[in-house]
Image 1 (spheres, rainbow, N blue to C red):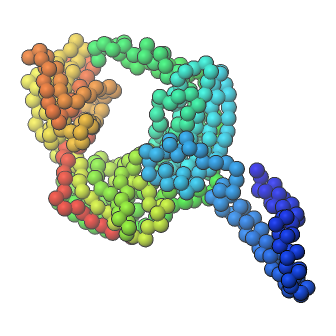
Image 2 (cartoon, one colour):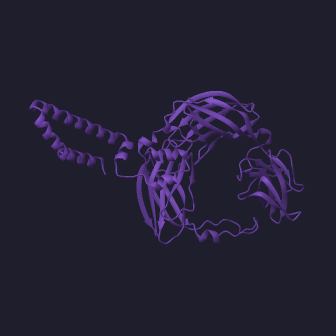
Image 3 (cartoon, rainbow, N blue to C red):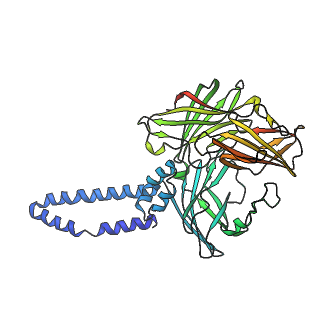
Amino acid sequence: MERKEEYNQLMEELENTPIQLEYTMQRVEARRRERYFKRFFAIPMSTCLMVLIAFTMLVNCVPVFAYTCGNIPIVKALAKLVAFSPSLSAAVENKYVQPIEQVQTLNGITAKIEYVIVDQKQLNIIYSLDSAVYTAMDATPCITSTDGEELGGYGISSGNSDKANGALNYITVDFVDVDMPSSLNFTLKVHDNGSAIKESFVKEDMFSSENVFKAPQDISTFTFKLEFNPYYTAQGETIQINQPFKLDGEDLILEQAEIYPTHMSLTFEDVESNTAWIRSLEFYIENEKGKKFDKIANGISATGKIDSPMMASHRLESSFFTESKALTMYITGVEWLDKDRQKIKLDLKNVKAEGLPDNVVFEQAQRKEKGWLLTFGGQEYEEDVSYQIWQSNYYDEDGKEYYFNSWSSGMSGYWDEDEEKYIETPGVFHVEIPLVDYPYDTVYMTPNFTRNVKLDEPVVITIK
């Protein structure tokens, strides 16, 4: 309903006196003199006019109020979809949602953009795909400016790929170096997520040329122009802190905190004399009521610096809707990348290496016709949870750079080629990495981090 139509409808309702009010007036007339009747009648009418003016101003100036008064319900499916994220759940509960309701149908597929949850730094697009032709679909998202130009300074991640037809799904766009634009073009390239994908993946040797994921052909492409209400894209608060502190013997500075409806972000700086760079933090924030805000559940969890391997900005769930008067940060652990272990030399022929990341074992190096297959074991820091031990780039003795683009991981054991038996390893996960078309016996690999440190006492810093 347009705001002007809502206004006209309210005016029409005010012109007609409710039956209950007429009955009341009759009773008043019988009990009061005429001058009291006039005064009684004048007060409600002036009050109604004041309420009407206030209502009109709220509808036109405060979108959240307008949304509440409108006829667009927050469906249960939306609340269920975002239940994994405390920040998005709070946004839905507080009706911090902009309805979009754009629909397109092409090649037997209907794509619908239902809502967006947006602020200065993050965009969550809630959409659905439905079809009577395809039983399972997935989509590759892309965003551009409304004039077709590429946008920079953002990261994009998708929700679940196994959603049923017509079910709500989401896509998260994190703007890192820039603020949210006022509008953008959002493109969905839809493909079959059924048997076509399974048939395109041949489970053979990791070095087989057939063992390459063949993306199925796009069956439909939808482009929507999304325009965002300025009320939402302006939401956010930046707190300058500039607090120096010590973390596991290294010097750091907490520069600032940013609080948005979708997340909180903390930005750190280090000093040149440090012996290691931060790769990840275990930390949380607590308000004056004891409510905890943990690491973010969706979107980008951390971003790095251009000129170093340090991960400088780290994200948590948002305190935006809690009206917190005080926020305190507690750091309980940290992952470091030591500066003297940025590249680690591996002797593939003898399966030896020095300076491996802590709690990582070089288990096997199998020479293949087209390269090497390496196996590593890593300690589980959480039960049945693995992590990336190595970054994808590696080097030969001359410094030439290579990349691996696939790997596999398994929990609690591995097959030993030499002993021809399965080795049980409780509390340890295993990673296999192929170095395709790599002929040398020595390789230099780049670790994702080298040390994982749990602090005996947390580092405590006041945010506000």
